[in-house]
Image 1: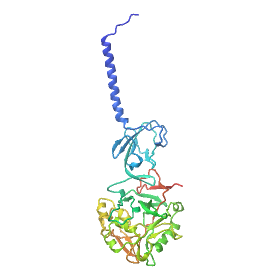
Image 2: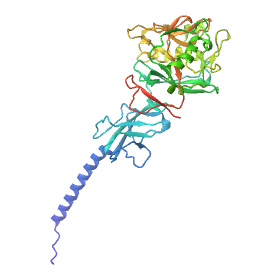
Image 3: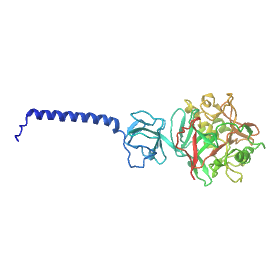
Image 4: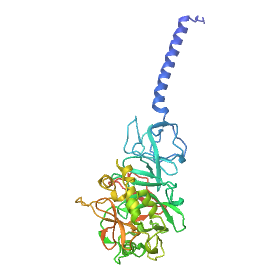
Length: 416
C-alpha cells in the first residue's frame, strides 16, 4: 500500500478543529460553573433527609448575611435558616411543594423533592433556636429581639439574671402557638429560677384572648400573690376545668416565680430594664413573700405576665425610645406596637392584671392600664386575666410548614 504524504493543510485543519472544541468546552465550563459551581453537592452525608422519589442531584447555594459561602455556617456561629427567604426549585424557580428546614443539630431537611438536579438557595441569618425551631433575630420592626441584661455599676441585678433573653416584640410578630386547642402567644425564651436555685431559660407563653373575663386580683384585699384568690383560681379551677390533660404535662412546675413589690419611687421613675431588675429583688410589702414556689400542694405554676413582659413587647419604629421611657408615660407611640396591649373587637382597650404587687401599700397590684401605661390598682378591682406559663425544655416546636402567624401558628410536641 502506498503511503499518502501528510500535508501541511491537514495539520492546520486539525488545529482548527482542536481549537474549536477547546473553545466549546471552555464556554460550556463557564456556563456550568455559573449555573452549578456555587451549589455544593451533598452525597452520602448525614445532611439531607427526606423522601426523594428520584434523588438525582441536589445542589445547594449557601448565603450568610446575603453573601455566598462555600458551606453552611458552623453551629456555634449563631446562625439559623431564614425559611421565608430560602427556596428550592428547577432552573432558579421556587417550588412551593418543596420544604427545607434546619434542625437544632444543624441537619438540613429537604422534603417534597421529586425532580433531579433540584437547586436550593439557603439563606442564613443571625438567630436563635427556640425549642428546636430556628428563629431569625431582628434589630428593628417586629419579630424576635435579643434582650441584653448588662451588669454595671448602675444596676443591682444579680449576675445570674444577666443571661441574654429572646423576646417577641411588635403587633405583627409571628409568635402564635397552638396550645390547649386554642391560640396562645410566645413571650420569649426568658430567664427563670428553678427550685434548684439555678436561673435557666424557658419558653414563656400567654393566652391570646381574654375569654376568662375580668376578675379581682384578691377578694381579701391583700397583695400577697401566694394567697391571692386569682392565683388559686388559675391553679385550681382553671387548671382542672379549662386545660386539657394533653398539655398539663408540658407546664414547668419546677420553677420559682418572682413576686417582689415595686416601690412608689421606682414606679414613678423606672424604665423597662429597671422594672425587670426590681421584679427580681428580694423585697415585698411588710415582709410578704417575694418568691412563689410549690410549697402549696395545689401549685401548678400558672401565673400572669410581668410589667416588664409588657414593656419588652413593644416593637415598631418607636421601640428604642419606648424602652427608655418611664412606664407611666407610655402612650399610643408605644402601645400601638405592643402585642400585649389588649383591645376587644369593638376597639375598646381594657385593663389587664400583672403578677407584680405594689410594694408601698398592702392592697395594690400593677396592671396594664387602658391608656397603655402601667399603673397600680386596688386588688379588689377587676381587670382582664391572661394565664401565663413556662414550658418544659422537652416541649419542642415542630419543624413543619407553620410560620408562627395567626393563620398558621406553631405546633408543639413533647419529647418523652
